Length: 411
Image 1 (cartoon, helix red, strand yellow):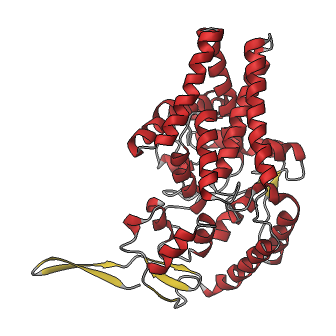
Image 2 (cartoon, one colour; image 1 turned 135 degrees about the horizontal axis):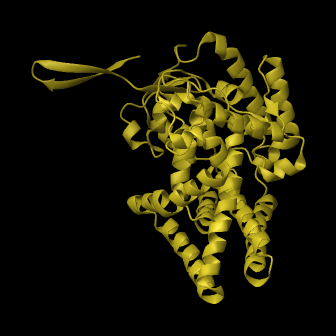
Image 3 (tube, one colour; image 1 turned 135 degrees about the vertical axis):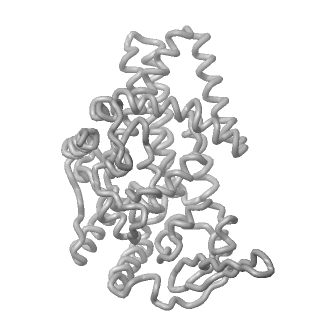
């Protein structure tokens, strides 16, 4: 790797290594570009590595990204970024993706997007009606919680720009449904979630591991410290208590703070709409009743979304802070599929039970995973001796909560 010389005075100088990444067989110098990268410091995760797949998936359909890439200093790959032992399998993986693209797998479906949006709206309307206009208050609150979770799944796909394929439309839908539906910031989510996809289960990189003081998914995050009294009870507290606390922390502190700090006007508008509707309902149906319904629905929604997110990664091995893995290794070793042959689980987890496929191809519309995509990925894994890790839904729950209990044990 080449170096950059910085002069600190007439008699001293400091030599720093150039920051380089490899994309499609060319090495790009990103030293001066890092601070200008629109996606933030996540680009540092790829320094010194082959970033072809990360660039392709994070910037799918972005002409701006392609134009910026062409302006960066570059040279031909000298073979140092991708070990020869990995080159064959990564080339084969590229052929797999190219085949899927040629078959139209990455094309979105307008009708599917309409269905997903109408589903969330319908669930909210049914939930409000049951909770506020009938005696089925508990059922109504549960439906509202599910609606919040479904809004979260929809927002998640919008953040990957795999809903419509149009970045502006997908971002609009993400901000709309996450703002009104969940009371949260889509921009904050994109920043955090992209880091997760760039390095799942990687200490110091995957923000989904940074969950203290409420939860510890791996003993490594404790950094040698004894588990706190709260952590020791996390297997019991995670679903009923921790998920609610995280939901409220996100809704009333972390996400509003991000919106204010970054000046996200449209996100501010959607939050305003959300809370104006809640205030209106409070004056119409009683402030106490609406407040209790709000707490109950957020509770259900928090359990729904956070528990199901936890199934796909948290009980799997982590990579230490200085370790390395390529795109394919992250997906094959640090994700797990859940009951992909069960249609209800597929609906419940909104296709994210196909977590291996999702981490290989996050820019692919998620409803495309069942069938051909899953079959081709299974064949690819079998061909190259990779384990296609899939467990049943109840087993995934058991693994997740058993892991929480194991981490909490004082040794």
